[in-house]
Length: 310
Image (cartoon, rainbow, N blue to C red):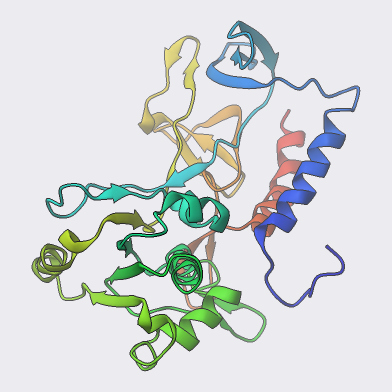
């Protein structure tokens, strides 16, 4: 990691390699007991102790462990919404697949006409366009892309000591590709413009629907890059009484949860993309701090508070 350019973004696999190395080291520690399985339920009793039920991956047997602290790092998955119009036969392409060039290449036919609809203008959407474009100009010459977007491309802007649209704007390779190939002023004549057609969906619901009705039926596949949705949580309860969604309010100021009355739920915490930190920039814009480094920075801030309240 030290050999990488410290002033630029990098491929996520570098961070993944570090994470794997850390995990391999952690599970070898005497004080760490690794359980490979799925947490199905957790209950907080009157002694402020959590009883966590785990279904073992290999044997499918269930086990229970007791802990004063339960940290939810359950993750999120690409958001999927109903296809806007009736388009029989169109296949969904999972965004996670589109963002992995090796998997994407095998997910699409190589020798027959294929048109992929990409919905969105986020960082993930631009990376999806980039990967599909790379495929179209190399191994999949019959591939074409229709890009459905409601708004212009937005970039992170480096200000005096802070970054405007730090969590929502384009950065790094995605920003370079967007500026050089996708902006309205360059797309008609750019190399990417040979394969990508932009479908402007701005102007309200009726215009958006009309654009989908006109252009989506000619697509064979669709991928939606419109955000991420929190993955399902295990069944949580206090004294065997189930916690409703209203009784599970995320508060990133301390990395924990409160109930509907604002009371802190003891020993329950969260982190990662499912439970990001709420941040406000100098202009008053509210965002959620999403990114590997930002998750680590957040945890460094809140974990001392967790330890102090154990």
